[in-house]
Image 1 (cartoon, one colour):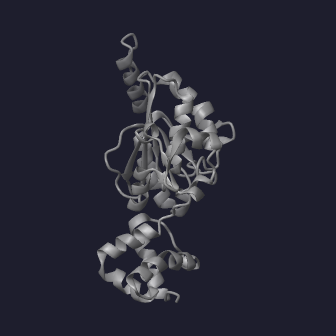
Image 2 (tube, one colour):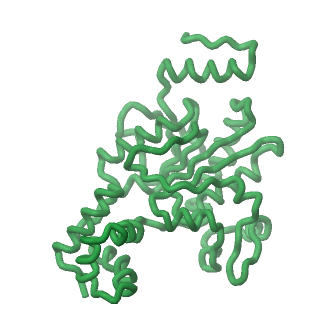
Image 3 (cartoon, helix red, strand yellow):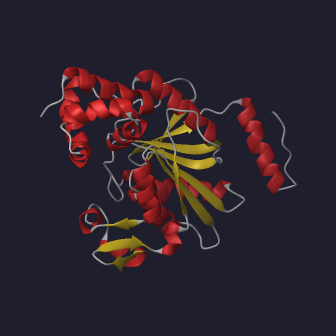
Length: 291
């Protein structure tokens, strides 16, 4: 049974308020397909289930969780991971005295992206370097899957090279588990990008791919501004292939790495001073000044 226009409008507004994701009327079929399992579990029609959702904060949270976008695969689109290996990592090796790399996989879904990042860093960082990947999503269900690090065969078949399967996964019944050395690199956390961010470290790389397209222009501006505050002055922002930050204010400059367009912070005087002070802390022969 289809939802009435009023019920669909209520659900769409709920999701927009909580996540800023837009579900216009023409996407009603997607809303219905995501809610059908919840309604069936409750033994209710779709319309009756939405009536319950209106009165139940717990069901509201389940609806929002169900309507987050969770499309993902291993090494999705591949180009960003080639750029990470051949352009970004060499740049970090040259400029990071602390021999540590910190990456944020924002909107990470069920974890294929952060673990793909972990595999890439394992293959291309020197043995005396360390790395951590913060993996966040608005969906608690997806973040729990990242922490579990366990995937079915159908998921494994989506983009994972056979060599990586052998090296970085072990059998767990009919599923596959990520090996401990990669799991130890990944820090799962629930983060809503359209709200004030929780305390986060400074990142060398932020992967924010295929999520801005679900927001309107003003929300995209706000999200990118928050992300900019977490990124090192010489850090890298990686967006989806159809996304750009260039029309969203003066905080970003663009740089090409192979076939990938990277976005980097447009450095201010305070950014440059901070970078010089950080370098001076690691090398006493350097002097940090504002010039």
